[in-house]
Image (cartoon, rainbow, N blue to C red; front, side, top):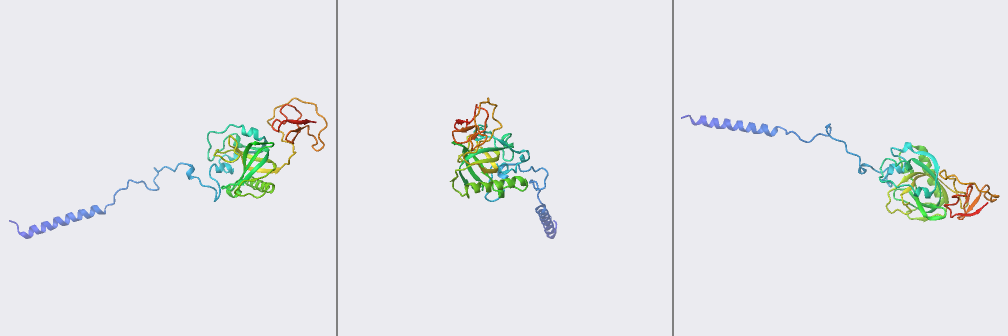
Length: 281
């Protein structure tokens, strides 16, 4: 029989070996199944409206790049104004989608010039001046034009930024300072602005297709008896004999029922959007 001291040392040696193995296992780090921040297998965050932020405090969000000429298609906009009227703009087909940072061709790539009656206006939460206008003599035929605060636009495109600022100053010179409530303004104006389709959400004065001029690049008062613009889209009309023009409107050939004058040399369609013909000269 082996001596007792031999068994004691054997048990002690076994205990030391087991303790050493246990310590080695607890000190070995576990492999992580989570990829690191620099892992090439990670995919970038996809674009979504949630990742887009306004240009600054008190500025807008929805389609804001398009509204402020900061979108990816802004360089394609034709800034040579195309004469038209509110009736034709309201008849344009409404889009089915409203991209956040791209334009809806061809309307949003055009600059338009119209004559209109200002009905009312207010300062919006996004710092735009929201203006409800109508066809002259037809207050039910409305649409919206918007004057942008250049503090809510991005750097660059200095000529358009200057135009936006000048248009806003001109409007306030015509209609007065804006506030957070609707104010009336009985002015007839000529407005130049870029075509824009807005989502219809019950906004005051919105056109049935959501068409706007946004941003407005120029605005001026034209008075009550200024001849309407000669529209580039008017069809040819048959010639009619004319008499001496009205002395206060040299060259005018017809007076419309809403008090405006036309220089048309053709009978068909003259004053069709101004209540009809009151008198030929």
